[in-house]
Image (cartoon, rainbow, N blue to C red; front, side, top):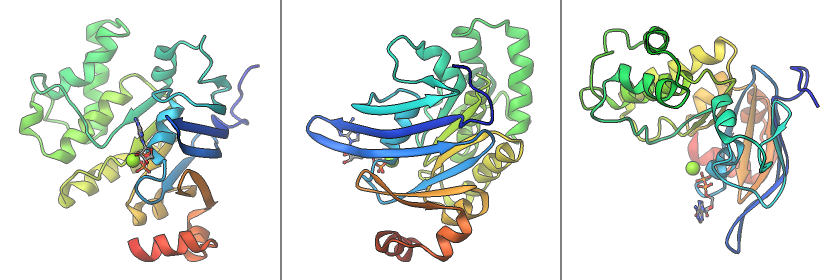
Length: 248
Ligand code: ADP
Ligand code: MG
């Protein structure tokens, strides 16, 4: 089966996931087309992180299926490295190597994991740091950068693998308010260039601005989903309304 861009680049079908006896995802389905940006919102503990970690196989699943570009992510025969080259992920905790510069952090995986030639990787890493608006910070160490700058290095590091899809899990949640915006601008730039993005976020204004589709999760199910305008102006389910009235 060959994937073509008229089919979903990510297709999640009736996924169930448990930790021990506790079922955390209770039949979740969701499709993402190439170039789309989807935002997942919902209360803490509703399964948002678990869901996106299933997409790049950081979590296994009990049943259902997840495909990326037509390939079953949870097929034991799938090469996890190939999957993670295709699907980049950025977390709340950016975990840069503290004793490496911004440039070295971005270069690390392509050089060490993919064994790509250093000069080539360096040129690309410099371009990526420019893209995330960190020109001039190439030689700075993480400790010399603000939280927002470090998070942008983490985004550049992920982009260095040349992914087709980017997953963002509350990447601004741990940042000082004044640096949140610069990270959101970076994500908006990426989306505008056509990167397929799945974002878990508490930034409702941003979700509304950037998303093609917003999903609301509660207790392991997708309660409702809609284009942002419809979602925020006419939420249908009482749980969505209650959540939005707390956060807006
Ligand atoms: P969210 O990101 O929406 O806050 P999570 O996906 O992190 O929610 O968590 C959903 C539920 O799964 C929570 O009840 C959480 O305690 C549980 N959970 C998440 N990760 C693990 C794990 N590794 N082991 C056991 N339980 C977990
Ligand atoms: Mg989470």
